[in-house]
Every structure is written in structure tokens, then in C-alpha cells.
Image (cartoon, rainbow, N blue to C red; front, side, top):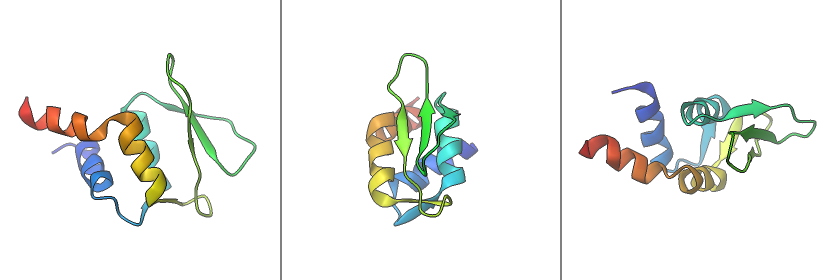
Length: 86
């Protein structure tokens, strides 16, 4: 199983927190790039899409509520099902 798939599985379990680096890897896998930001929030952009803002806990962890938002915004459930039904 590829790394992105394992991370998506982790996100779909909705843990209390995930590492910010895992969020970066998933967003990178879906074509988003981190943009410069002056605040504590990280912003990711992809051409043709609205930017995604990810608040972090001390710059290292992302809380469950934001993981849920990423699941919805990126369509991770549908993506995962498509990977396993192909």
C-alpha cells in the first residue's frame, strides 16, 4: 500500500490529532503547495481551487476538527473507495 493511502486511512479514522507533516504529505499528494504565511496558520493553494488554511497546535499537530474538514474538502472517503474499487 502506498504511503498516501496509509495517511488517508489514518485521516479517515479521525484521531484526536495528526502531525502537521502528515497533513503536508496528504495535501502535497493532492496537488496543494504551502504558501508563505505570516500567521500561525498554514495556507495551501492549488491552481483553480480555493486555498486551504490549516491551524496547528504549536506548529506540530493538527486537531480532529480540521482533519474532518480536510476529509470533506479533499473528498478523501470517495478517493479511498475509488482506490479500492479500481
